[in-house]
Amino acid sequence: MSDSMRVVGLIPARMAATRLPNKPLLDICGKTMIQRVWEQASRARLLEAVMVATPDGEIARTVEGFGGVAIMTSDRHRTGTDRLAEAAGGLDAAIIVNIQGDEPLIDPASIDAAVQPLLMEPDLQMTSLMVRCPEDQLDNPATVKVVCDCRGNALYFSRARIPFDRSDGSGQAVMQHIGLYAYRRDFLIAYAAMEPTPLERTEMLEQLRALENGIRIRMVEVDQAPLSVDTVEDLERVRRIVGS
Image (cartoon, rainbow, N blue to C red):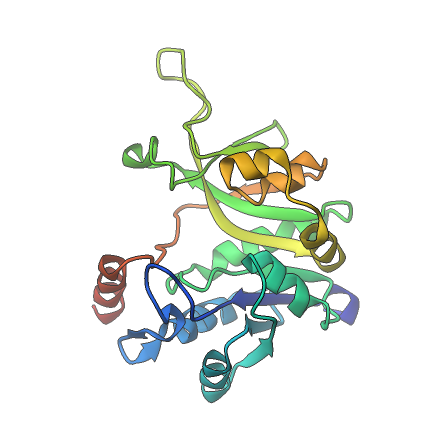
């Protein structure tokens, strides 16, 4: 792959998580969470490099200790996207993939699935992933839903159940959004600089900023959602899976 098409995975990570402090450095069967994420992402076929964007020296030292590359960023960023945009500003990559730092079982094939449309369609600026929403998550506002047009571009993201099926149950399936994104580097930097938009502030969903500014987000369906580690119970569940 030529320099002009370099695809880089970036993992935003910080110590100051509210629900699970020091989350990136928590142990999962002998390796830190951030190392588990980095190793999984490094198996993606289409990524030339995987780096960690962090404001914390302790995370950077840990990443360098297992052979990874850390990019130091400001500690004043409001979101992971802002942190990513700062890190991307110093890279010559054409495509940046935003990989969540709390998904140690992320499927490398899902990362490739997000990148592929950007390699095929020069005008596309941004992609993300979705999966069929489990029944028990349909009305959970923490599980974000997405509806798409006939070409697979996102029409809207919501914490509510969308679409609402008024038929006999044979209508469109509800799709759950997975928070992994791939962007063209220059778009990511411009996107992070945009002002928050009304729907974004209403739903507290940053990706609505792109839609409200007329940017297409191509959604790619994958088989399963990765397990996010947000609680001690999630952490124990991942430890059981990794250790089995």
